[in-house]
Length: 533
Image 1: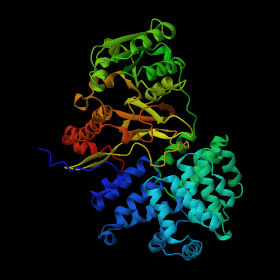
Image 2 (image 1 turned 120 degrees about the vertical axis):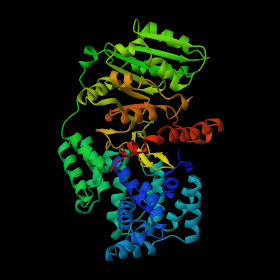
Image 3 (image 1 turned 180 degrees about the vertical axis):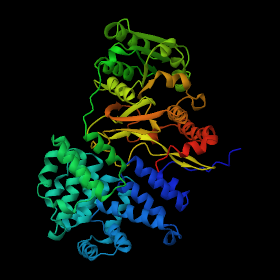
C-alpha cells in the first residue's frame, strides 16, 4: 500500500521545503538537466539550503549553494545582499570593494523598504513611484535603477525615461552595462543590445550573458560566433545541459521533410467544448499550414454554443472532403474525448496522429517538422513542441517536464518552463524528455496502439496528457521535444488566470495531484529513471 501522501502546495519553494539535503541536491541536478539556472530558481534553492543546519557538513549542499549563489550574482551583479552572500562563501577583495561602493550610494532604508513592500505585493505602480523618487534625489542609486529596470523587464518593454536621469558611478559602470545588455538581449531588442555589446569587456562575462550574446549573434546570422560564445559559456559552467543541446542544434540545420506529408497517412484530431471563437481561429490557422493528405476530425464535446455551425462552415469552405465532425450530446471530458478519437478506425490506419487543442496557432511546417523528428528516432512514441503565450516579446508557456521528486510519500513533476520565461532561442533544439505539452503533439501509430487510453481518472481535464506520456516512457518509448516548432496557445495566458479560477477548478487540479501519485506509486523505481542525473 502507498505511504501516506505528503501534501505539498504548488511552488518550487514549497517543494524544496519537504526535501532532505540529499534530495535538494538531486532536485537541483534534475532542474539543471532541464533548464539553465536563473536567479529566481537559484534563490529558491539558496533559501532552502541556507535554512538547513546541516549544510556545513554536507559537501554536496555546499557545492550547490555556491553554484546557485554564483548564478544569482550573474543576474544581479549589483545586488548588495547577493554579493555579501557570495563573499561569505568565496571571500574576494573585489566583491568587498563592490559592496562598499553600493553601500555608499544606497537609498534611505525606510524609503527602500517601503518600495520593496509594494513590489512584494505586486503593487508595482506604487513601488516604481517610490523608486523614481529615490532616483530623483539620488541619481547614482543603483538599487532604484535596477528596481525600475526589473519592472520594465516584467512588462517586456524598453527602459523608461528614467534611464536618462540615472548616473552610474564609473567603477560600477561595467556591471551596469552588463545588466542593460542582458535586458535588451533577453527581450529581443537586438539593436540596443549589439550597441552595448561592442563596448563591453568580453573577458569577464558569465555564462548567462554569454548565452544571451550567442542568441543575439545567431539572430544576426552569425552562427559561428554564436557557437563559440556557447562553448565559452559551457566551459565556465559545464552543468548547462540545455546549452549542450543548443550547440548540437547549431552544428547542423534542421530541415523538415515535407515529402512525409504525402508519403504517410496522417490524422489530425481536435476536440472542443463551447469555444467557438477559438476553435474557428484554430481551424483557420491550421488551413494556412502544410498538412499534406492529412484527415481532420473535430469532436464537439457537448457544445451548446454555435461551434457546430462554425465548424460546418469551415469544413465546407476550407477543408472539403477531408474534415469529419463528431457532435456529442454531452461533455465527456478531455480524456474520454481523446479516447473516443483514438478508438476511431482511422487511428489504426494512419502512420501518425496529431492532437491539437482548440485554441492554438500553428506554424506553416509544424506537422512535417514533428513527423521528421519521429522518423529520425524510431523508438520515439510522441513528439511535441515549444509552447508560447500570445503576444510579444514571446514568453514560454510550456517546454517539457520530467519527474522531480519520487519518494514513497511524494511524487512531483518538474517545472514546465524556467522562471525566466522570455524566449531567447536557447531552447530551440531536439531532446528526449518525459513529457511534452498536449496542445500540439504527434504520435506514432504503434505508440497509440500500445497506450490507447488517456486515463479517465483525470477528467474533466488536466494531467491526462502528462500521465499518458509517462505511460509511454515506462513502456520504453522516447518522448521528444522539438524546439524548432513553436505553437501559440491562447489558454490560461491572462496575468490573473489563477485568481480567476473557480474553487471547483482548483479542487480538480489539486485532486489530480493525488490521483497522479496513486497511479504511479507502484512504478516509483521506473519513474526515477526518467529524472535527469
